[in-house]
Image 1 (cartoon, one colour):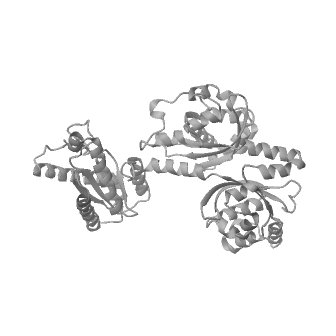
Image 2: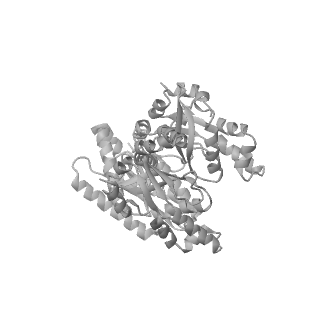
Image 3: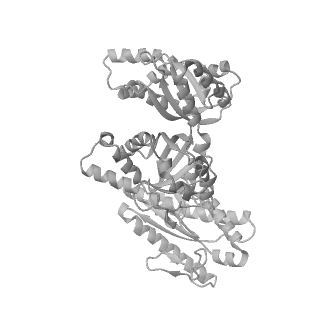
Length: 513
């Protein structure tokens, strides 16, 4: 990986003031990386006729190192520094050759294969080393974030330290005597299960000539339920009882139907496909529930015991609770699409949504451009806290007024845009009238500075006209704002060349002076 320090515009972009804090305070080790050069290499390889990246990488191990060198680290959080025993990001980057070595390339091959096959998320196990030389076994998960300038230029990678678990597994393989101790003391939920009945069902299907198992499951979905019923749980460890909030093993096994989440059917079908295709070790992210009904996000690893490959009579299932990580990831994703102050969608989401509607050739889209009146005056006379309160209140109005598939976004300081797919002028006017009514109700509920909004409406009837129609709505809003200030004997706002408004005093939040 490249150790070049990121420039200012390569730092983690923050749609809201809390995003850097969430990234830094997360209990998971996070890396923000740039894979754009790796993407460019993949494109060149495809152009050269490479269809499967795995054999190409296996032919020459130096190709793995070449791919690793194209991945640039932009930022790491505090938990990453603690994990690798580094006092700063600069120190960590300066010693990457000591951190990423040896066994790391084995797991890296799997990550590259997943990216090559078009996955926007990838996961696997890898080995790194701390600055003191201590081995780290890591469960890694990466996700491609929306690009800023070019494909794959922002990749969020989370790493979970599973060294203790892997060490226990290695010791268990070396000594049968240690196996029980490993099982009882493991810091993850462990289940020993008997899949032999499933193996017999598979054998029967093969004898009947079934070869396309995935299609078979699509037609015979009841087969998944039957396989679930055929699993025999032989044992679980103490950590399992703690994790699922069960008073005893008997209570847990008697209420397994309460543990299985609604999506268990789909995820278990994928596990069956893995087994059918001979993958006797695989890992998945699944959802279960505790006996008290709490949702658990789980990283599942399944492996058939050595010596039991012929009948699957002993299968080890390990479940790691990743609920905290998933909640942190979900919050980061939320902040990536929302404006924190108003709780509306942000400009980045709005641009992506506009592009999506164009790609879908959406024929009818209404735009409502909205702009708060007197925001700069409120900031100047009452302080920015009062101005923020106006923005927050207007966010409440739009969140109540706009239903899906419509979307309301804050695209500037005091600028808002509403997208209404499928609505004509009359229907969109009804939405705008409702917004104005809710503004009046909001002013009755809150004391202090009243909300006042200028608005413009336009409707696109062809996907190629979306940008033009958005500007038409903006110009209509600007005309409404001019009328408002003329009525209230205010100075009129100016407009730039392409119709996007600017305040006379550009040092404010974008409101007209």
